[in-house]
Image 1: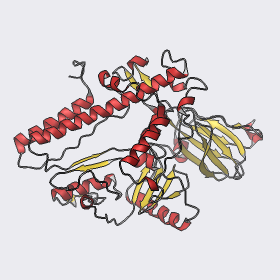
Image 2: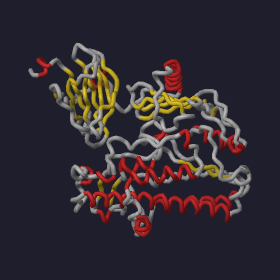
Image 3: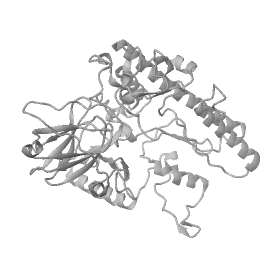
Image 4: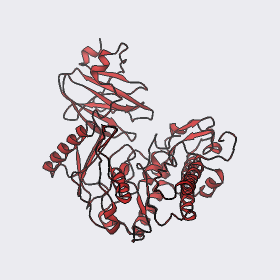
Length: 480
């Protein structure tokens, strides 16, 4: 069907299939309740949208991501969010100001786009990419309207609980301007079936207004999403905010509660994993939620714990915990870990207990550890470690696909590992003791700096597209 229909669009197909399911259920099993999970892929990359909808948004984003963040921040205040306890965070450091975009040359992620030879052309590309993104959101919204109309047509609108949410924050994959792949890379093809592009970190930063960081991260910019509940016969409140903290694990208990169904203990004689989360139905009348334990997150080694007003974040498998008072600092700008070490210690203990119970460990099961690598018939090759003279700096990181490194510290001293981000700023990733090795997830073309424990630079290396060893040796031995 898709190959024969030039107007086929997957988002529309998902909406239509959902509508047909509701109609079929009404015809064949009207006396029974139903559950429908509608998993749109929009607006995830690759970004595709009907051109006539894209055209509606072209030019609307020429003011850039800085202007968009300010406008959205103002809109958030107008909608009644408690912005007095929030703060608009600074633009992510490696993202340039919109007016400075391409001031140092055409971004490498746009090098494959024909005819992009000036900063204004770069901004034209980025305006179109955000227009495609907006068109994807509009068409998804139209599809949701179609599903709701079907509920009305079948007489089920008033007694159907609808939950709308997203799975993560704005996606910065890959680089400031996103990637450019696909059969056709020209500007006029972007958004069509022949293209395969993303919108990049600049627009993702605006999407996450006012928060920091992105998808993958466990800061609010990575894990905070909308949750809209609609149920005319079950929720009397209209257009009201709720400030209780909810988690994706709460969806199942809520559905079971509304449907008055008990969660089974076993099936066919097999014990079932116990239910997580709590029902959110109490929030429909603005009652507080009662939990037996904090909320937890882990993704690619990025971790978080939320317990009441406190949130602990460790962005990386080997990073130290940061601590934020979300009741006063939802944007996570004031790290209080040093001020409240006992709270950090308690939350760290809670996270590890949960990780063991919930089968989270190992955090990065797809990455080889040192013992596995030594057993491999074809061990990973090495990449060069470059020493730095006094005053020299490591280069900025570039962009690339996911990879891995194993840092083997053969020095007689402990060292610190730092990722040098796209703005050239070092980001701490903990210490490696003498004689120890560490497996670390990374990306191709990322720069990693090694310093002593007083932060004096020793050297750096740049990662490869495939997993590699990095051996830190004394200078005389390294030259042999």
